[in-house]
Image 1: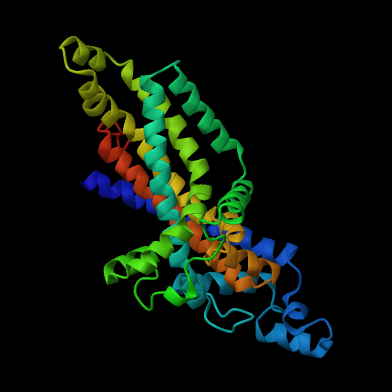
Image 2 (image 1 turned 45 degrees about the vertical axis):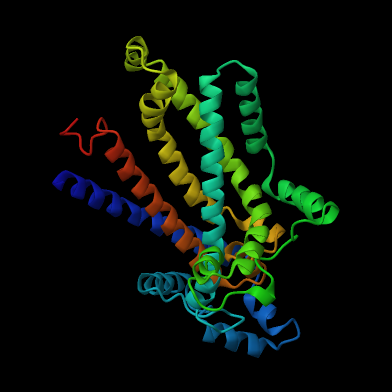
Length: 341
């Protein structure tokens, strides 16, 4: 237990330079490549004096190093300042939209994990058969097809042609739940509002399928590779020699051990989905932080973009840490220190 604690502390300390680097990169990118927010906010016809006063009020005329240190100070306290446009605290703006992104990411990783594991196991067990080739083809399509292109195709088919699914949005405004966690599936389910639940699920289908396809492909390929490696192990041949049924060998002996690296991939893919939902949210007009970030980039809303990127990076590295700990827990061969090795 003491070794685990030391390992966890060491990994947490390693996250500090990573997050510091992310903070510096996004800060410099916004300052160097984004247009001056003053004329965007005040309008092109605003006077130079008005623009200078606005920049002074928001600290944009201060030396760049002081601006960065001020940003870091606010980040450490959770205070990222106010949005240039709404003049509301950035954290309030983000937290109002974050549940939508979390809900989409959770639904996507669940769908990707279920389909990916099923396809991967099937491909490994039925190696070099039609099922294996079909699974490989699905994985190849998932890796190759752009998310936004798949989203557009789904909208054309299911909304434009078949008229069975809504083309965008998160829920019918007349059915929107009030209060709760902001996770509409959970809120409508716990409140017993099944009409709103059904409408929420209908809105979720196409964005979830679109966002989950790439992750499903990665999980499929990893599951297949891990299962093939596990099925060639000596203890699998021993289990078969003892007369254990093939179903039991696959389920209780091969799959449990093959899932160790797959668990790592699933965790990392979930972290990626939080930051990779930008295109999906934009295509489906999903009111999450992805589409909101794109809007703020276009408007040079520095505080919002910096806060979103840093928050997503923090979540990603935390998920990475948790996955590493789970991996070490599941596989006793993984050691926390060189001394144990």
